[in-house]
Amino acid sequence: MIGTGYGRTDSVIGVQTPEGIEFVLSPAGLAVRACAYGIDQIIQWIVIIGLMIATEFLGEDAGIWIILLLVFCLDWFYHVICELLFRGQSVGKKIMGIRVVSGDGSPISAGASFLRNLLRFIDTYIFFCPIALVCMLVSRGFRRLGDWAAGTLVVYTSHSLAPPLRSTGYSLSGNWFQNIEPLSAPRPLSGEEKQAIMMFARRYPLLGEARADEIARPYVKTLGEGAEVPAGPSACLLGIARRIAGGAPS
Image 1 (cartoon, rainbow, N blue to C red):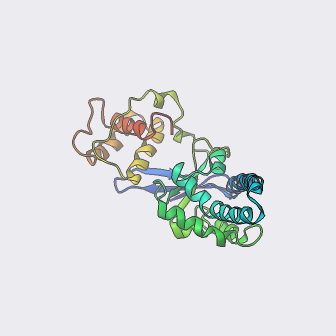
Image 2: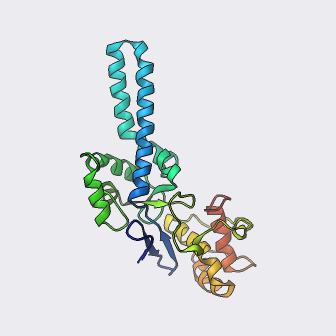
Image 3: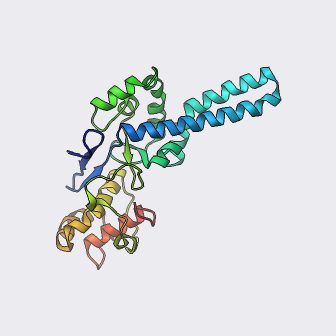
């Protein structure tokens, strides 16, 4: 299910779980991703220049080989290391408020990160990256070739510098969410289940308590014994969402 964001620069991809709960992924468009990529390139060049200055003291021959080795490591592993250590974000993505996730919204795996960045060589092979641009323009979710192969998406976070989407009801930045007591789920949750619960929390202000309890009740039953709380099923899911968010708004 796809909605629309701002013209042709962004889109909204809706995913529905088997329990009937929907959540939304907001893929990042061309402009914000280009800015993030540019920031990362600048950072890499600054590091390379600094290394070139530092290796001058090692002698010409040794310095050249060390620089070549470090340039290779930066070029091939910078994004992989950042995405795995910082929840799908390089420095450029962090600044622009976007991150890489799996197609179902769960955190990116090591294999997927390595594959999407391995194919970055093809995406950026020609000046101005025409292969990546064409793939992103014609694909659902603005996926470049590496994203298609790895099954990943680049999506907005709640701290994105890009214009917000019109769906204002999906924000978790209000005091109502911050004041919710975190609850632990009675069993380990999959990435899809976590996204479904977070989507429920984002929709909660638009539903009303009665409708929220109606939606939450069958889903709470799938979590197993111990999931029900005296305050009601919607309060249970909101508490779990608060725990998933790490004690801070998502």
